[in-house]
Image (tube, rainbow, N blue to C red; front, side, top):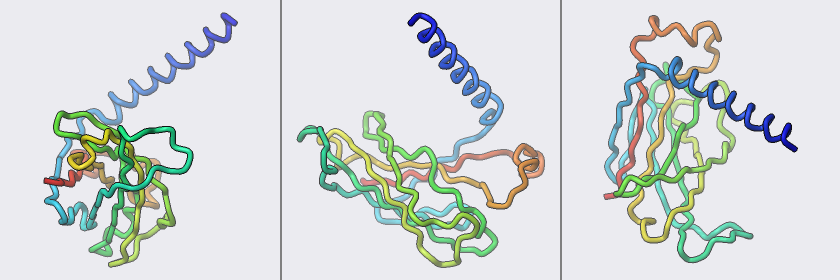
Length: 178
C-alpha cells in the first residue's frame, strides 16, 4: 500500500514539475491582450470573426445538482473573413465564465464537426459547450477564451522559432453581457 501511495505521489510531483517547465519556458514572455466585445456584437482576431451567446438550458439527464445551480449553454460561432488565415483552425482555448467578483467556472466544449485542415471563407462553424454556475450569477457571468495563432500544416521545428513570428501575444476575447 505504501509503495502505491509513493508511486502516485512521485507521478504527481513529476507532472507538476513538467507543468512548471512548460509554464516558464513555453508561456514565458507572452503578453495577454484582452479584447472586450460588446453585448450582441462580434469580436475579430486574425481576420476571424467570433460570436458568442449564453443561454440557460435544462440540466442533463442524471444531473445530481439542485436549484442552487444553473446550466448554461455556450454557443460560439467562428467565421473566416480572409482566405489568408484559412489554416487557423484551432478551437477556443481556456474558455471560462467569470462573475463580477472574479470567481470563474470552466466551459466544456463538444468538438463538433470542425475541419482539421482549412476553414472555408464565410462559412460559420458552430462550437457548443456547457457550463454550470451558481443560480444567483447566471445572468451576469461573462465568457472569455483565448484564440490561437496556430496554423495547420506548420512544421514542428517551426513551433519554437519565435524570432520569425514576432513577440508572442495571447489574444483573449471577453464577451460582455452588460
